[in-house]
Amino acid sequence: MTGGDMASHAKRLASFADRFASLRITSTGAAILDIPDIMYNVKDSTDDPKIDKLKWKQLLITMSAKSTGCTITQACYADTPKADSGSSHAKFSVGGHVTTDPSGKVKKGGVCYLMPLCSWHNSTARDDEAFNHAHTCMLQLSGYMQSEPFETFMARIDGAAPAAIVYADEEGLESRALADPDRETAKALGLARVGGDRLPESFVILHRVEEGGDTFYRIADSRTAG
Image 1: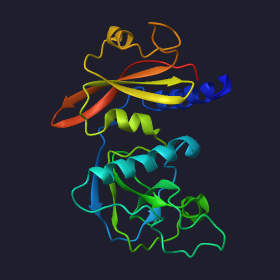
Image 2 (image 1 turned 90 degrees about the horizontal axis):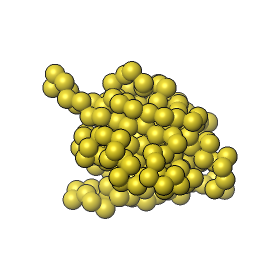
Image 3 (image 1 turned 135 degrees about the vertical axis):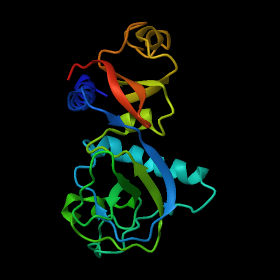
């Protein structure tokens, strides 16, 4: 990876920090379910398909392997619309964000689904088109946020971590749960490989908050070079 690549990772993190600097960040859950409903591409579901989509695909594979119920089929689920001859269909190219709402919109903190899609069906050119699907085992995501990097999702999954750090390095964005949200904890974990025992140049620290029966996260500290 080049320095320019690291700058783009830092920019993605800065965008997340700017959007949610003073807002509640809803806790996120994931569960394997059978969903036969017609699906539609979620609009604005990722800010970096080349980086995040591969990891959403891996999340589907990992969750399916752990499931004691249905099994996710590793092929594009969408039977309609019919793909062009010679297209990427029926490969399992990405973990595609989909919704039962024909508008393709999912409110922040709402529910959407993740299912195997080929690049042809996952394209914005297929927005607003109905996906019928014979395979019904997929991942239900709760606490959805538009254009969210995979790493900030995983940092909050199931509200399990009392705190977490998401930081940029040369390989992309990384996340680690923190038992103690202190900056000194982040230093002690040695997360800043390049900078010795210093914090990463670009990072966001999330704290879990429980209030009025709700669990959510807030940005407790950040430094972004984006």
